[in-house]
Length: 392
Image 1 (cartoon, rainbow, N blue to C red):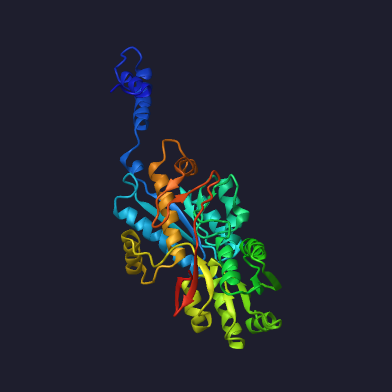
Image 2: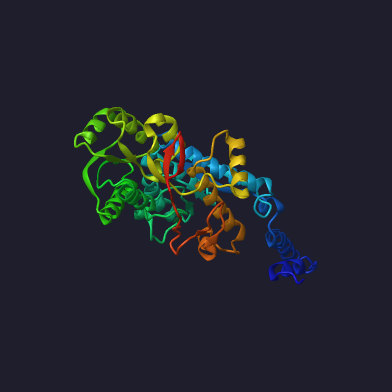
């Protein structure tokens, strides 16, 4: 095979030139430089691929963040065990966003400064809204975990996600309350710190519920902090004697609110978005969350060989049962790894994702639109005997 022109010239320059020793010396120097740049060294070719991980591991949504981190870590460890990507191992750089926009921004700056090839996270819409512009400006792809806000959709940026942003859980809950339980009016308790998600979700639920003939009696907004009086919030919500209360908050706060509400009215119907449908809801809520209606993006009782193998590997690795956050993170990471594995020369991870668009996953296929937003189904769930089971 003919040598590239610079290399051929460099070899030719190695011939001695007796009448011009200075020129010959310069040519030999240039030749060594050219030859060293003709092909990457083995050390350069096998440098690790660096991926950032930015999730909440210390704040109020840490149960979501830790499950997401674990799901990503499992996908990366399996890929490394299989030889990595084109012989290159994957190195993870982990940062805690603390469910705090300022802390998240600092963590993102550290990952960007470290020149990661791409990043995974965050798991909440509020932090995603903060970080998406930051990673976009840096030209680094950010593969989101479970941020579902429609406010993040339809943007030509570096933020991608695999879950639906059209609130299918809100639609399922609205129909179930009206059609199955005959409930025409509800009270809403909405937590405002993650307003990027909670406010759009409430708007979608209100629209879907109205289409079924239902209405919202009162909406009580709160922002969680160390002084939040959950008992007082429960009394306020029950003042109008509603048959059902919608709790739009994270798993921990939903469990605390459910405990207070059920102490005052054991027969109260409770419902919550998929955001709260995590193991922390079951662990913290106990009997108070029995019968809670919610949604999940995956069928955790799936008996297919691929899903059972994933569940077994996850539980052995982390000593915890699988939840939807872990499945989402695992799938999202596999999508990202596929793009890194199949990208063409000079193609960025974003360009590779938008070229491929269609990806396999543990359950239903994943399809990305032209903005990197995914579409996924949701399963309507209810808590029975400390487990999420299909409500249908």
